[in-house]
Length: 221
Image 1 (cartoon, rainbow, N blue to C red):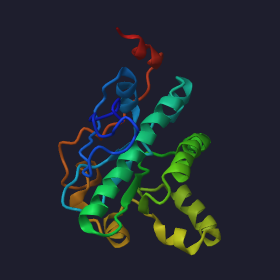
Image 2 (cartoon, helix red, strand yellow):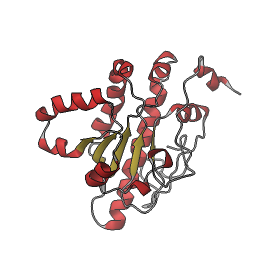
Image 3 (cartoon, helix red, strand yellow):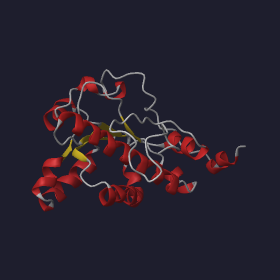
Image 4 (cartoon, one colour):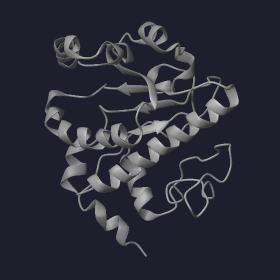
């Protein structure tokens, strides 16, 4: 966490150093800087909503480049940092409100083509870490701007999912604002401008493609 953001949040034994959570993402190593260039996941800055809001730009990730340049392990490390941040932000919000607060996850699939389906095993490997070590961090999972083939696939598997999981997941197309409000209670104003909201000035937005020989970046002196 110190390498990927604000240091000093933990004691040497791994326990939290404060009941508040003031950590924010900032690369303090070359490895972290490389990961953040190609990361498609973030937590939005706290505005006027109690729950942490997580956004994954799944349709903008350069899966081919991540695999080609052997960046999978580095991206997994960045993803674990992202989940830890979500957990600790939720913990702080829960302590402040006196009730359990969990994150709202928004997965933006704009640009996710059928050619990306072959990289789903990589996504499953990354997400499996969340299921194993950070279960139930998210109260809802809302997939927005979903392509038609993804919505069709979900309709086929939905009857086989537990009812609780069905209520947690919502698949929406490009006209997602009303559906997002119904599923999560979030207004469009709380979203970044690239999703039609009013949140501007955040660094997260464009996910850079992975160049050839990307690992050479780590060899800088």
